[in-house]
Image (cartoon, rainbow, N blue to C red):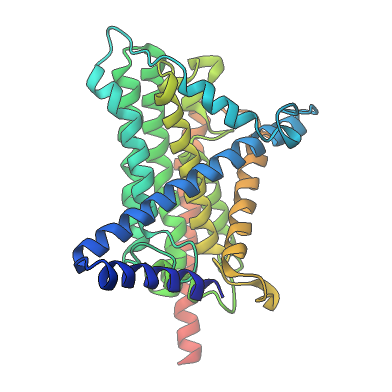
Length: 351
C-alpha cells in the first residue's frame, strides 16, 4: 500500500515534468531531488515540534511535575511560540570571535545532518538514493559532524565553549568505533551495506534477536554520539554553562538544536532498520501501512533515548572515556567474532 502510493506519486511527478513541461532528464532529477530534500527538512521540523514537546513532558513525568500545560492541548503549542521568540532574538557575535568560522559552524552541522538523510529510507522505495554502500555513507557523513562542534567551540573565543568542543571531539571519535563495530554483525549476516537489503533480510526474523548485544552497544554508543544524557558532557551546564554553543543566540542557536534532534531521529531510524525490521510488520499485521510501522519503531527508539536521559545522572568524563575504550570496544569486537563463528557453523550445517 505505502510503496505503491509513494512511488506512484514520484512517477507521476516525473512524467509531468518530462512529458507535460518538457524538462530534460537532468532537470527532472534536480527538481525531484530538491523536492525530496524539502520533504526531509519538513519531516525533521515536524518531528522537532513533537520531540521537544515529548522531551519536556517526559522530563516533567520523571521529575514528578506537569511540564508545559498552558498553550494548546497539554502545552503542545509551547514550542512553536518558543520558535517565534528565538527568531526574534538578536544574533550576537562575540567581538573577539573568529567570525567566519563562528557563523558557518552551526550551518555546516545542519548540512551534515541533512546529507545523511540521502540514503535513509522512509519506506520501501521511499529513498533519495538507495546506494550499495548506504550504511558506509551514513557513517562517513555522520563522522564529519565532529568538525562542526570543534569549529563552534574554537571560534567562540570562550574557554567553556572550547572545552565543550574538545570534549565533543574526544567523545564522538571514541564512541564511533563501537557504534560501527556493532553494525558490522548485521552487515556480516546480510552480506550487504545496502539499507533496503538489510530490511528485506528481516522479513522472517528481526536482527535484534541474534544481535541483541550489538543493539545494546549501538544504543549506548549513539547516546554518546548525539551528546545526550547521561553522556552530555559536552553540554554540562554545571561545568561549561552550555558547552560549545554557549555564545550562540537567536537563529544560530536554533540551528544547533534542529541539527541535534535531526541526528537523534536519524540514528533512531538506523536502529529501526538495522535491528527492528525497518518497515516490516510484526506478527503478520500487514493491514497497517509499512510507513506507520517504521514511524512507531522510530519513536520507540526515541522514547528509549529520552527515558535514559531523564533517569540516569551525568557521569564523569574519565568514566565516559574508559567505558567506551575498555568495555564497549572489546564487547563489540567479541560480538563480531561470535557472529563470524555462527555464520561459518550455519553454512557448514546447511552446506
